[in-house]
Image (cartoon, rainbow, N blue to C red; front, side, top):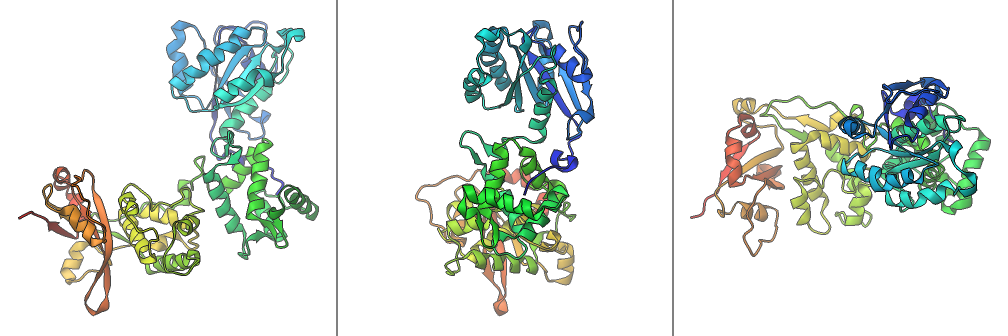
Amino acid sequence: MVGGASASGASGNVAGVRIVVAGDAKTGKSSLIVTAATDNYPNNVPPLLPPTRLPEDVYPDRVPVTVIDTSSSPENRGRLVEEIMRADAVVLTYACDRLETLDRLSTFWLPELRRLEVNVPVIVVGCMLDKRDDQHSVSLEQVMSPIMQQFREIETCIECSALNHIQVPEVFYYAQKAVLHPTAPLFDQEQQVLRPRCVRALKRIFILCDHDRDGALSDAELNDFQVKCFNAPLQPSEIVVVKSVVQEKLREGVDDRGLTLTGFLFLHALFIEKGRLETTWTVLRKFGYNNEIRLHDDQLPPPIKRYPDQSTELTNEAVEFLRRIFATFDIDGDGALRSAELEDLFSTAPEKDGALRSAELEDLFSTAPEKPRTISTLHLWSLMTLLDPIRTMETLIYIGYGTDPSTAIRVTRRRRLNRRKQQTDRTVCHCFVFGPKEAGKSAILNSFIGRLFPEEYVPTTNDRYAVNSVDQPLGAKKTLVLREIPEQGVKKILSSRDALAACDVAVFVHDR
């Protein structure tokens, strides 16, 4: 894997980048912008430039860049804030021959960006390098290291001279690169490691490319990966070099079958450390990931169309897939998934517990046994599918559901047709539990799933769920979801016809 990047794959189809240049007065902002745009140093610069478009062919990603000049004068304060809030990246300037403007970065400008909650990359630029007295100069690293330690949002520091055309294009190249290929989602600079979500995405990509499922990328698989991501094959000599680099630093990164997952992750960490973030971003985007390192919307099935009185359930195909994958990760074969086994199951999803650990299911998780059995985990999947089928399909994709994810969900028949036929096709029934405070609603839910009763009364303020199997005549089973409706939530439920349409059966609890 030697990298490279196509423009569309590397940039993530970004329409344009808006860079705002800010800093103290007379620190070279306008001269920097004009020189970058025209390749000529201006003799006369207006007090404030209009928005300036940089030539697209200057940078390899060929993404339009618009640069916004700003004024630091008090009367232009409102416009400065407005422009900064709209920025994709901020370039902060100081004058190399005026140390007080450098000090102002850490005493005013950077704290101000934090106060405004501007969460975009920051490029610090020392302008007018030609005016600095070389006899008293110190290295850029010495000057900026303490500031960068304090303000982690600084992506890059660079010095330039518009007059002498020194590193002017590089300023906006680094700013554009920080937007198109951001460091923060991929790499923890403080710990110097890949971020967990990046590791999870790369592990999923590795598994997808490991066609023979032997735990390593062979030379052929590595070449297929290279062609898919970078539209160019690897020469045999290049493959040898890649594996040699890995093996030299990490012996377990390569074995007799090829490049291991450990080696694959090591290579990406190496690319990032060397400033080649576009390589890892190209890989992620080729496999459908966005800047939050989640699958992009166009990788997911469209919303499911249904009437309010229709519900969504897992298909038999999805249930069988889940049973197989649970068996695969049940290493000790005891019919239950330990915490470590459950985490391994979801190790290719953005969160360590997949979407099962959500607001609706957290209460169930907090009281679940240490080793939830396969059937209990299937109950959680049934509940998630009932409440949020799109999230179910997304999670199935993450954990390796290979066929069309829309085949994992079925929409049940409308309830009025069930009444007409005097039978239902539903395998998951939704029961609303109503009643006044302290009537025993929570006790019913606790008893249904074998949860211990709390010693003290704790009022329910939000909807709670419990899910379990219910035996039917002739040995059949259905999944029953109990939804506790707090007393203060009844008015809202009764005011919405669609909200009640989800209810298959209602239980009214009272205290005698």
